[in-house]
Amino acid sequence: MGEVIRFISKAELERARLIREARANYERIFPSSGPGREEPGLADGNGGQASSEP
Image (tube, rainbow, N blue to C red; front, side, top):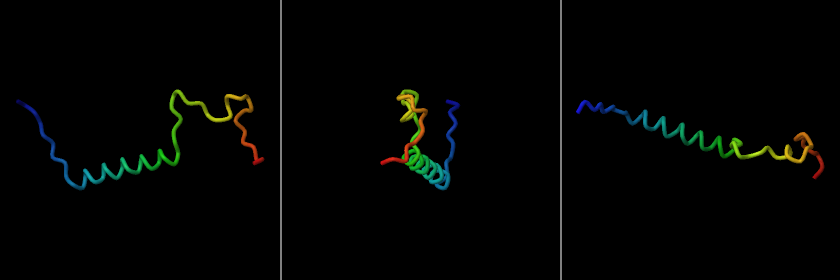
């Protein structure tokens, strides 16, 4: 008793779905490093500088 039911329109549901999809695509392209991950190149002491050699 006293429970509130909120109406969510189709447009709002679609907006939320599109935002979730966009965030998933962004994360796939630009993965965030998690707390257990190290940036490549920083652990071996080279300062993380990229090499232009193949």
